[in-house]
Structures are given as structure tokens and as C-alpha cells.
Image (cartoon, rainbow, N blue to C red):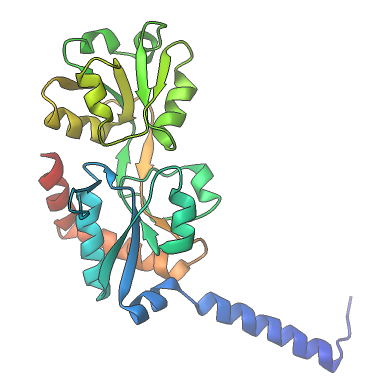
Length: 258
């Protein structure tokens, strides 16, 4: 079937094509380089990936890598404090990228894009070493007498609600001091990323990570990016591949977890 377009229709058609191509050429990568700043959203409460110190500076695996990313771009890295409940809104409004132990979820993918996964992780348990033998499986954990502590707003809370139907769930809003609740006997166990159980067991001699090498589920960690920005995603993915190939990624990882 043949449709006849008038001059106005032809003009409108090419205007739409031109706008589409122009839109496709626009990338956050250009604005970052032009501004000289890479704005990184991070929670600052999730070591070893991101922790905010008393002087308001940040440290951790993803903090080191964010600084490295900024240097590779030739710009200054600026950190923007966020929280797990407000992560998506803060990222959309204030940041170019979000880093700090962020798990890939289908819900987050509705609002943003992710880089290629840079780490495979999964949920594992951490408890007082004296009690660790009691909590070797989800079935042993999910008992009415078990007090499982959760930090609201992230994948830890969602996972705990999904798999624990009988245990007592205790919401505790401060992710920095939540593990002290375990040490002090105010809770029995926490389900969190296996990488974090290893870190916290290093910080608290009373706590033991339970089978961190065999997590209860599969998860990926990656960085949040603006949705639809193909050029920026390709650049960050290429940078990460080079970091892994030249050993820099492993050096940073070992600095914090070994």
C-alpha cells in the first residue's frame, strides 16, 4: 500500500528522525566531561563497599573505584550521600552513577540501568560464633524463637521477608551499628550479602559468617546508570573490564576483604 505524503508530512517525518538521532547522540558522558565532575550517589553505610567516616569522607571498595573512574574520565569525583529507601529518587535527581554494593534487581531496572555485573554475591547469614552452629540452614533459622534483624529499604529486608515466615523480624534503621545488636545479644542473626558477612566478621570477633562461600541465593552487584544512555554504559563497562584485566580491581578488593 502506498501513502502519499505532502510537503508538510515529509518535513515532519525528517524532523522526527533528526530529533531521534539527536537524542540518541546525547549522553551523560558528555555532560560529565564538560562539567568536570562525576556525581556518585552512595549510602555510606555498607562496608566494605561504602562507609562514611566521622569527618564525612567516604571509604570502601566502591569508593576507591569511583575515584579511579573519575580519574579515568579526567574529572573530579563528588560523592552524594543517599540511603537505601531513597536511593532511586536521589540517583535520578542528583547523580550520574550510583555505587556502593548495589544489587541488581528487576525492580530497580524499571527505573534505571545497570552496568555489567562486577561481582557475584548472594545472601548469607551472620550470627554470634557461639550460636552459629544452630543456624546452618534457612530451615534452622526460620524458627519462632529466632530474632532476625533487618535493615529497612534494601534487598536484605526483602529477602528476609521472602524466606522467613516464622522467625521474628526486627527492623533496625541504622546499618552502621546493626551488627552491634548481634554482638550485644539483642538479635540472633542477620541475612545480608556474603561479602558483608566476611567484612563484619573481621570487625567483630564475636561474630561468624555462616557459609559465605555457599550463599542462599544468586545475586549480582553492579552500578546504577541512567536508563537508555548507551554511550555512558559502554564507557563504564569498558573501564571495568580494563580494571579487572590489569589487576587494579583485584588489588582494591583484596585491600578491603583480605
